[in-house]
Image 1 (tube, each protein chain N blue to C red):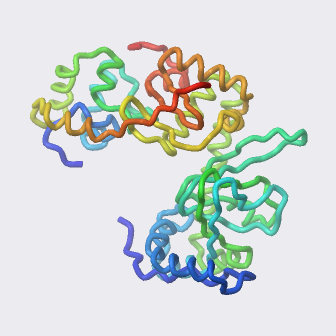
Image 2 (image 1 turned 180 degrees about the vertical axis):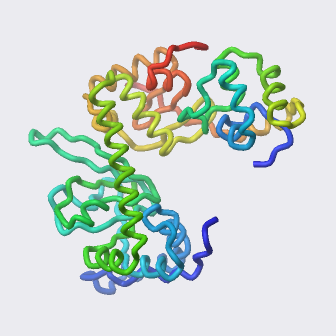
Image 3 (image 1 turned 135 degrees about the horizontal axis):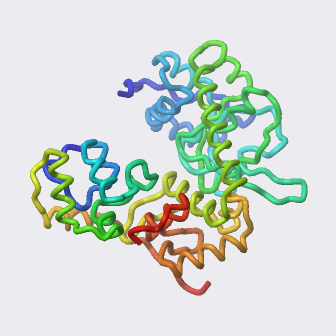
Length: 94
Length: 268
């Protein structure tokens, strides 16, 4: 994956694989993401929410470590998010 | 970088014993169309890694194919002679029954994975029953074909050894889990394993889209249906999962990892 900026919708696994230098920014915040089996599912936004970190400040640090410019691209983020399918929830009656 | 393996011939005509009736003809037509895709699956399977194009062609030419519907059985525990299987599409459970009839799912096989390798090498009876969890399609190498592969392609023996060693390590890990971990922790691990295997990121979480009943989840975890239901209900209350019929949505991957790894739940 070649992306010019980090987006909140990127998964942890994508980010660490593309920019290994970012790994320290996870452990420094006490996040157990590096080596986690679910790293290929969880996005940066979800991680920030789980660990109650300010997403933008954290993204800025990750971008710095990755050596990419820090920019919040809300439009692209919304596009990414809308690609996700809605799970069909069958919650009835049991 | 996978090498080009375009000129894969249709799988050999070992559709023995079922002469050219109409359904067979239809299958042949499909096989020609799909030969190329199979080549890719075969090539990517660790058992056939590092083979030359000629060797790969030999591998596919010795195989026959089997298609089963959901709940169809590839082989039963105790059957022989054993054949090597490579699942092209679908999902297969390998089950073992105890003397009193209680079943344990030893392994879940996904597309691209080989199964019954050890039995095929050993030439003994199958130690497990292989049942299709959904419509499945596999390549099968019977005993003579397996022997020919081993004799003519040295890398296959080496690869087989590596694959089996990996299986042993996985089993050792599962044994440790069964011996030392709480049921909830084991069930969480089972779900995470399934998520890695067949999970799909969807809105609101990771969906495990496998037609597994709670009974089967219990058989994979080494526990009872009752315990699985109780755990899932508790996790639903905590907002970790949503458990539907034969479907589980992991709402909080972090929460479930915390249970599975017995992590302190910081950040929760």
